[in-house]
Image 1: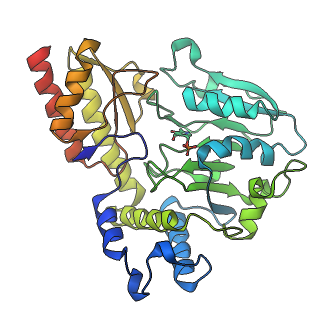
Image 2: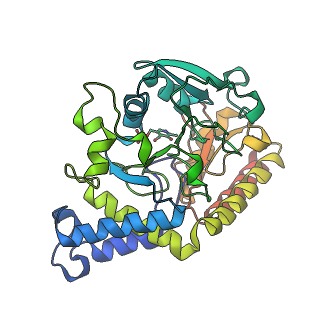
Length: 357
Ligand code: PLP
């Protein structure tokens, strides 16, 4: 089967198989990873290996901390202003869709938000170009969503923000291609697309941004709490951390992020070409802003959506139903989706069009 869910999403088969093999007795320890103390030497070795592999894959500079947290990307919508505003009262946000909007709504509880860019006028089908961004010199940081999971809109560049720290919600595009981490002040991602099971949230933060939080900040919301304790101030999501580590090893086995990027680019190009070359399917996103990870498409006749979906399920092409706000279909093709899955989807789409188009 090929699972096109937007998240929690498909994991690499090799990772699931390895987790199953090790489920009852990890490495001769006589324990399942689920049963291990997070402070025991077994789990500490798992945790350290996962962090080291992530640092290697993303070439994370030494002056960045990697935090393994809970609370989802949604908690970061609040933790970011609570920790990064310092003595400032404003932050810049780029609004490119549903997830940026949620981040903006939460930030407004803590500070003034100015929109450095906003594509709501074209119904979130483009990304603003660098020259159009209006950056406020008094902003504490600039936040953007490099990949909008629902709209299928992805930045094809990293915004240049000078001395103002750039903050990115990489929930749905982290590890899909190489990035220059040093361009960012903070990167965060819920794990459930390209990293591992839901319940783990990764934060990669430049050290100078830690340690000056809002007055009265809850201990658990303070990045310093987790940075100082190696993400073990309290019990971390141990099993999820372990599975994330298996995914990082798998990415290394694939040849790292440049190899992932090559495969991801090819998968996405094929599917967009199939959509564009048909008279039956459509995707509204501007060519330079099309996501490699989430590809929404509509059928010429929405009355056929249900039939399309049930035929797809019969062929093992699962969870293609689009987000309720957009309708139609959405194929999420994260790292774990093999090229064969995309090929099978395209054949099915062509067959369905021939029969019904
Ligand atoms: N940001 C983006 C871009 C997402 O796709 C999601 C979806 O899961 C979230 C934030 C919310 O993440 P979480 O469910 O981990 O809070």
